[in-house]
Image (cartoon, rainbow, N blue to C red; front, side, top):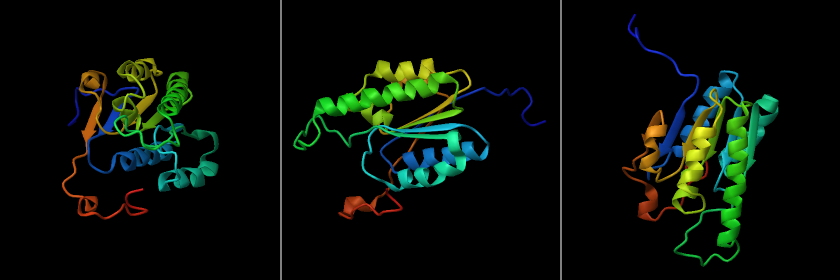
Length: 189
């Protein structure tokens, strides 16, 4: 047999990071694979508070999966500590939203109720200082032994790679935004 000597794991930690497009899309694909395998999935959103296509999709399929699919949207939008000109959401409101979303993620990941917990854009929340590296480490280490975890967003902290089973870096080769074209609905969001 070609895989003689190989073992399986009860769960894994997967990271989709990098400057390129496709991190959230990859996590939605992972969600589809897990649901297709009759798994229980929690999809937890850390940044995007506005309605994007993946949120609409999840809401549309939720009735089909009942309690096998949990969706939580806890973000307050993109955060830039260097540019606080957007006064509609204060830095403290961003931080509080990230902390509450982290609490939800830890509950889902440690409960044993879910086979897969996806934390979309959590890496951005850590990189932007809304959460600490130790918060992300706690999420990874406190997860139930049979719960897989998917962490997306730019700038995953390299010091945590030793806690990860699969890490993929999305690298931008070209993107039409660089030529001053706005994002396309259905493709970019």
